View (spheres, rainbow over the protein chains, first blue to last red):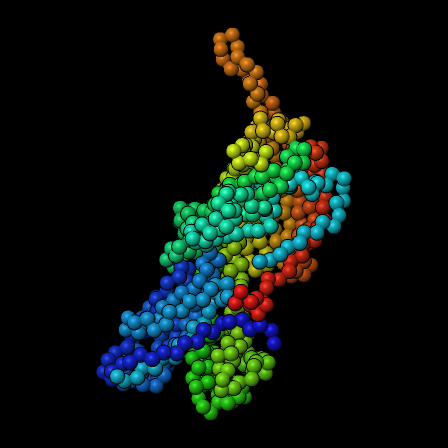
Length: 120
Length: 441
């Protein structure tokens, strides 16, 4: 089989969260001329609105997030002058994923994140 | 880096310009992408484009010094764009719709080129340096904005569809009951159909069914799904999904459009040549300088068609003393003004460019002084015309057939050879693949 182009950049992470504590997910674009379109599915909600570029979204409290939360974000940078895509994904202000990839490898990357919210 | 081999198959007329006349390359109408290389008349064997100040410093140090001494590298060109040497933190909208001043700053680049084989009139090789600067200012209109927003809208819909598919994919792969591609496809069939229907990506149920059939059929070519290759499988099926919803194609067209945007642009370039005729760094001449002003209007730019009209003003000024010394017998004017127009069109595999340029040259020579002590000059003038037609035909992705025909300006060397008639084939060999590069080295 021919060399497979890298499209998907998968991440997994844990974020400790008490039952009654709220979780807010945030996308922060660092690189220039980059867009991020992000969709999220929590264990209890599959209909979270799409986040466009720099945006944040409440996910619910810890008790409702005990399964796996899935995130998929398509990052696009059509500017030939930009060497690297860089986007931070945060929960409650803490960077859980600092994604970087050279635009020469992929300038339309899909970042997937599996987040588990264990109780303290 | 792409390696190009230029193969001159035939020179159909005796007037074909000489290959070894490095300073006598055919002067095209458009502003050069590297003014420094253009002014030295060289085809650099190495082109460096450092992206950061540190990389620029390293490139200059590595190439222009040897054991603490300054050296002129052999056929090297360096291009540096200061604006992009650090992250300017601009959004895609700011990138796509700059003001005239922002456009000027972002596109400003500086270039240096060097040659150890700059030929003097007696064919002696000498060292030469070229220095250049260029920028481009773009003024888009409503059509450009509409085209770009249409692409962005299509891509955003595709992004959402791909994301939603990725969520289904991840949830399905986390299901321990899913052990094979067949299990996987059975599990995602209904959710995917529902998703595509909900997002109104296709116009009819028939189109959705057609998509599902074609997509499912192609999954047979994916790597086998095992417990240990979820990442590889995810990557492969994401690529297949993109292929079937045509988002890669839309994105490729979008990027191509950004290179050839509809509207008006103004290219400005300036270059200066420094020659060391005795190859001694303490003795140099600045024999030639050039300024290019090129307004361009692109009437339309679609996936396969581009039509643009260019006008040009090019001013070259020469050091006559230098040419008298090192190019004896040649006819060189102190000031050369070129002005002309060009029409360029691209249609699928074929591109055609026709240009007509006039040149007005003059030299003022001091004759002495009159009885009242005023300096007296004599002015020598010349006018010339260049008309050229270039036809390119893409034979394959790796080979382009090029035919040049016309009449060029009187060259400095061999001034009567003005007829241009060449047929050439340019071959491109692919860049190295990741698998063929030893990254450990």
